[in-house]
Every structure is written in C-alpha cells, then in structure tokens.
Length: 377
Image 1 (tube, rainbow, N blue to C red):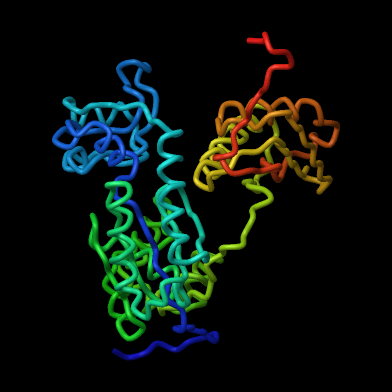
Image 2 (cartoon, rainbow, N blue to C red):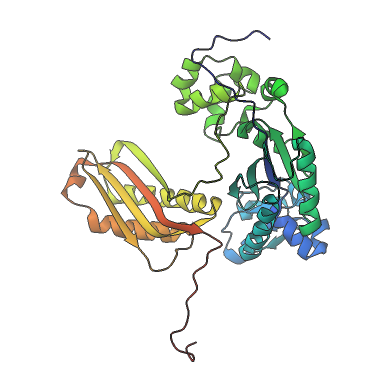
C-alpha cells in the first residue's frame, strides 16, 4: 500500500505489552450469576419505565436482550418498546462495586501497572509482570481463567503495544475473546475498522466523517493531516496518528485525579438566565456521567464563568459529605452559585461556563455517619 506524505513526525513505540480487559455485559452478567433464570431471559439493567413514567436509561443489557437491539444508554422506554418481554432490574451498584474490587485484586496478582477506566474495564501494562510471563497472550488467558474461577464472570481482552489498539482489539471477539494485534499487523487491523470504532468519533462526528467519504480506517488514512485538523481540530491531529498505529500514552497506574469537570465556550454569548440554566443542566449531566465513569465522588462543586468582557469568576461550594453523582443535584447547586455571583458584567454576555468537582475520593470510600451517643438512631 502506498504511504501518504507525513506532514509531522510520528513516533511509534512498540516496546510495551498492554492488555485492555473488558468485562462482558458486566452488570447483567453479575445479575445472571445471582439469579441463573435471567440467563435465558432478555435482561435490562435499568429502572422499569412502567414504574418511572417512562424516565431512565439503560445501563447495560444481557446478550439475549441485545438480540432485540437493546443497548446501553438507550432510553428505558425505547428498550421496553423493542423488547416488551424484557425483565428490568434496578442496578445494584454496591454489588457491582464489590465485584469490581475483587477483579482488580486479581489484576494485581499479575501487575501493579493498572489504569482503571470504569467498574468493568482497565488497561494493564504487562511488559514486566509478576508472573514473569513473556507471552502476553498466555497471561491474558490465565487472567481470564482466574477471573472465571473466582467470580464466574467472563471478560474479553485485547493485546497490543499501545492502549488505543488494545481497546479496539478487546471488542473484536466478544464475549470471552482474546485478540492480539502485533506491530506488523496493526496497519491492516486499523484500516479495515469502521470509523465509528475510533475513539473520539461520536454521534456528532460520524455524519461529518461520512460526508467527507471517511467510512473506515482506510479512508481516514488517506486524509492529509492538515485537512483532518482543519475539519476536526485536535481530534483530527490525534486520529491522523492513531490510524497509523501511534499512541504513546502510558498506562497511568499512578494517576490520581484531583478534579473532574466540563466547560464550554459560547458564540454568540449567552444573554439570559434561561440560556445559562439550560447549559448548566447539560454540563451537570456530563460531569455526573464522567464522575461515575471514573468511579469517583467529591465534596466540592466549582462553578466557573467568563463574561463577554473576559472577567472570569470561579466560585466553589464545599459539603461535609460526598455528593452523589446526580446531575439534578449538580445542576441545582451550580444554578444557586450562579445566582449568588452574577453581577453587572452579565450585560456583556457569558462566553464560558464550567462545572468541576474536586475533593475527590474513590466511590468505594463511602460516607459513614456515626451516632454521637450510644442510643442515637
């Protein structure tokens, strides 16, 4: 295959052995383990829309339900319409968290270089591992067997020299699959992947990609770097490298997030409280989802706003206990802070809004309120 002209140096480090572990339908599989009758029924992990007035979204679904088109992040009401016979099970996050901790203990039997992504997935750098195994494939198989032996749950693993390819590979043969992509096979593997599989290419980006004739990694590879940057900004710069097999991000096993937040710049500027509140709701939802995905909760909510005249205000509110990762609460507190700090600069409009949570701790660390006196209830 003819190589395109590379406009910027690309570095590819093939020295590492990285495994991406992705538990198969994690929450649903735990529920099936607890109640084997669910294995033959379409099981949806979500609040039953018939009891919530149609509200709620699907957390995950077992493979029986997926055959009906049910998938995570789908509105629960739509899942019910697609599969009227589905069993809806309210998520049991304390149990899922407990099982996740058990699985991470198993990871530590092989390596301490672990980067958790969510309850059900993590990156492991096994270049140098505790079992002294040279073969990452052998290690992945042993890891799967150990997880099954101790939890009766299956996982899929992707193995490669970087995180991007390892994550793509773990999704290649689900469930219970092991996929390895060697450096010499990376180009062929990436070029045939649909563009939707590339991390960062979401619902809003896919139509633009298709409009440009980019359907697979092959068409992405043929794009010039400057054109990708022009059309997609920073994402274009990243994708130009990813499709060439470059991703030097390390497995961040020592990372400790100090804050999680989202902010957005507006043009034209926001001119009314109604507009501000609408966007605060959207930001609060994104922050709540990100906090849940990183398995963190926090005690301090920070609101940031920048007026049209560039005057910037940052105001925080700290609570005695950890806040639940609830978008409605985040939005409520953000709106209250906004009402307290908004001033005459609002006449120039608002060009930026942001919500950040700090004072973070792992979700496994719970609030415990002890009674002051023996007879307190």
